[in-house]
Amino acid sequence: MAANGTSAENGRGVQSCMSRNGMWKVTSRKLPILKAGPIEELHERIGIPIPEMIFGDNYVSISHVKSGWTITLNAEDAMDRVSKTEEGMLQVAVAEEWKKQRSKQEEVKQVVKPFDWSYSTDYKGTTEKGSSNGEWRESDPQKHPIRTDLLSRPDPILFFDSVDLYEDELADNGIALLSIKVRVMPERLLLLCRFFLRLDGVIIRIRDTRVYIEHSSGTVIRQYTAKEEQYEAVQEKLRSMRENVAEAFRDANKLGPLLRTLEDRTDVFEVG
View 1: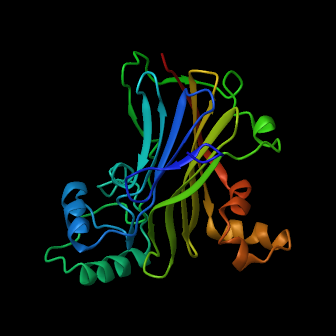
View 2 (view 1 turned 180 degrees about the vertical axis):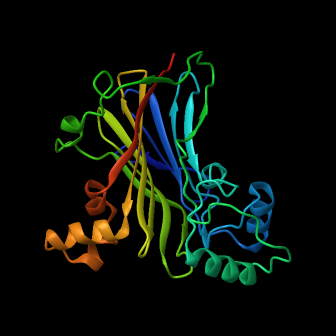
């Protein structure tokens, strides 16, 4: 165990951090992209083509040590939330180009089935309750806020990791990226799982899941926010702000405030 509370576990690519009071444990794993065999197996389980870069062995988990309650974020469960029907598909010309390219690359012998080829997911994590008897229940940010005032304090960072789950360049027409950032401080932790979609000339989409925990509490706060805006509308806003447009389009943090909020939901789990 290192002085900052971080340890490298026996599993390859695995790191973990225990809160100072021993109540919470954060674990992450980062490994290379999957090889052909595991990709084909994942394709068969999920039922849709796999993104160009799939980090199927990567994950981040947060566990309540006493009860075994755990929330885990991983690529397979996130992809399983991608629509497998035509509902919600982006009906644009590059969709057909993408399908043709991906069909050749993966040597698919049948017509690609309809699915959301932008890999947009509303994944909020996979929960295992352990011995806890609670359930996720809807709340609101006034009653259960993510304390940005406390998170912005210059507290020591005991643990930080950035973990990619999948990425696709959408036939060179943009990017779809699902990634996680987690940081642990002496009294609290914050996880951000972000899906970022930029489809050039069409749309910008950001879907964020935040998990916030005060180490002294058994309350897990989860906030899900979905935002999007038409590409041209964002482009005009950036120009009016005298931003470097090409550079800003690669920065989800700059784009987020310019998008319309479609959904903003707060849930809490009281871990016993």
